[in-house]
Length: 355
Ligand SMILES: NC(=O)c1ccc[n+]([C@@H]2O[C@H](COP(=O)([O-])OP(=O)(O)OC[C@H]3O[C@@H](n4cnc5c(N)ncnc54)[C@H](O)[C@@H]3O)[C@@H](O)[C@H]2O)c1
Ligand SMILES: CC(C)[C@H](C(=O)O)[C@@H](O)C(=O)O
Ligand SMILES: [Mg+2]
Image (cartoon, rainbow, N blue to C red):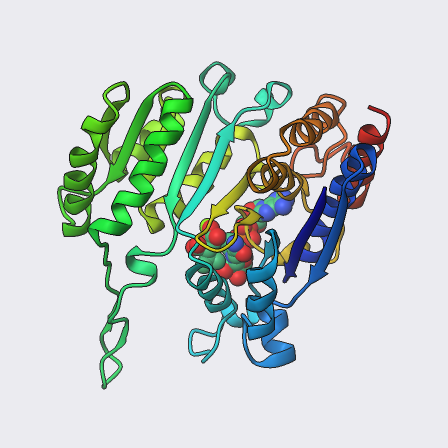
């Protein structure tokens, strides 16, 4: 099979972790006789430095004509520390999501049996936790208008907007996921306060009769934040709006042992993007210490959902499990015996070669 993959390494640790994912994908492709054509493009702070635009037109055109996009991370402290910056790396990520119609961000969270002791949570509580968070990605407070400041600069405002249509498409996708899993859907919202959340509940209630086998529960986001780490095993599929999904999934990474472990797939109207849920971790940039597994596992999600290469995706997951079992991990998982980012990539690629 020929695979056209756009590669957007981005900022900070982005290039280092994307390199490991490519290394691992290449090992799989060599084994299974596939041919990948990777084309790199700029995004984020790196793109601002070179073009003034965090999501240049050429990058967008490349994404549009690719079968899938492998994305690292964006973000740079020089913008984070300058609230008055006119253009920001994050605008590039949001523009990409909007222009590619990436409305659903799928974030699977499952504990690794060999890492139970790495979670600060009690092993018996996290053992076997396995759920999928489905985060709406192109609406809500991230994109609602008006957004800005009053003329005197003393008032700032953001607006959360959702249409029935936007809620419907992500809800149906979430129900479809639930049907393929344990048939339980948790809708996380703040319907006791927010009008958008009440429209979510109303919309989900109107769709639920189409999926009579799925048990639906509604949970306020503050409660969900607690239940998630108190009793993660109660969740199967969780669907929620853009900002709640962002926050809850970083929190959920604690269940697995590191933010560097969680991959994601952003399902789009035009193409799909595969990326770790974490950011550019600037403190680690260039040090060869960041955990590449979230990106490597995003590669597995890409093979499975963009190319229907299920067996190939399983090869990656099996190799990752083996690396964890044998302690071939970066310092976020084992300070004393850590190996480097590139050594983890090498080890996993080698494991696949010998499969
Ligand atoms: N999708 C994205 O590109 C994305 C996501 C989140 C944050 N960001 C951006 O990244 C920059 C840094 O943000 P932040 O520090 O809040 O979040 P971050 O996710 O970059 O890092 C937060 C912490 O998580 C841990 N961590 C993250 N990735 C790791 C990895 N691969 N291996 C080991 N540990 C890891 C580190 O302890 C780190 O200090 C900001 O500019 C932010 O806007 C981008
Ligand atoms: C960098 C930021 C805009 C982004 C988000 O909030 O969506 C990030 O946190 C993520 O999870 O991809
Ligand atoms: Mg986030």
